Length: 367
Picture 1 (cartoon, one colour):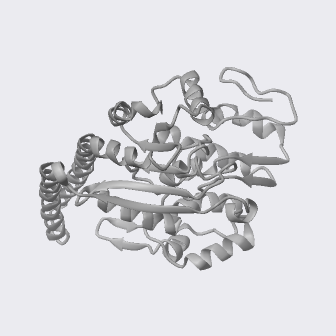
Picture 2 (picture 1 turned 180 degrees about the vertical axis):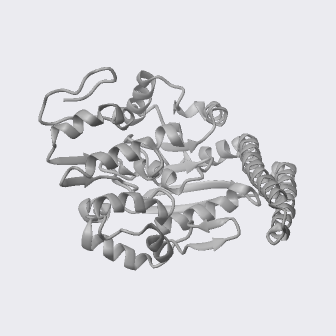
Picture 3 (picture 1 turned 120 degrees about the vertical axis):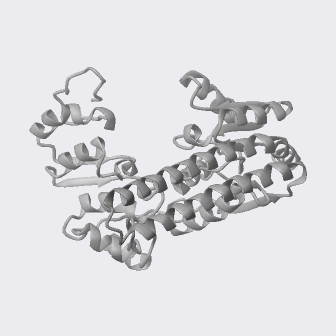
């Protein structure tokens, strides 16, 4: 029996509940004394500081049998797996710092520990398989499912030369400011003025935040500027493909691409759409021969959908999180797919996205 937002916990042997209201019903769930807990999409509890993680942790610690399910248990880097692994095998994954040093290539910087790396992955996988992980590759259980091929399509700057140069100049200026601020922090490490050091660190963090915001703004502008080239590229692919999926991030980018490809029969799927419109878009793309292009936002269309009527997906924009990209790719690469899935990241030569695409594909290999 499912639990609604305002409902009390039902008196039943099986209870289905979502993460958002779990903490509200936690006392009643703990009192029930369940024999098993199944945690679906367990990558949603990768942050130990969140309310949902704490609620799940409290629940599963009182239950002997637990099953965690996920298509991407580690969306970005190995450190994100520790909270999940610790809940399933606390005796094996007892020490956070031990795990971080061994498998995340952790090292200490002037600003604290860096856990963003990856190391000894073969050993980690072996330990996971021996203790808690039953991994089912699509190639193992779906022998009829063909492979997935990734490509980075680097377009010449053409009419975007000024945009790319402005992008590079702005990022270079911010990076120079950050380097200068970092040097000031280094110079104050041994200084007897803790207030000056604190202010220097705060200034450095503010500049790093500004760099991220500026990079996001610049990437948005570049994405809008390159939409005619995306349209041209997809139009060329339409000569050989019956249907194509295009993934983007910003709504105005989705709209611009949709307008440029409307002659092929386009549907869009974004977070601003109602569930009815979303369902209609997927149904039309999957069943109507006249609907040849599906354009979705990576976040909204990246999970839970089946888009196997196409075998080519073009990313007009990229996501910072490699796991989100992999999930979006797998809307095509799933049961029902009869062809090899071609994944294309279309970027402009010299742009931030061109650099990001190579980094993202490298991280996908690590994951």
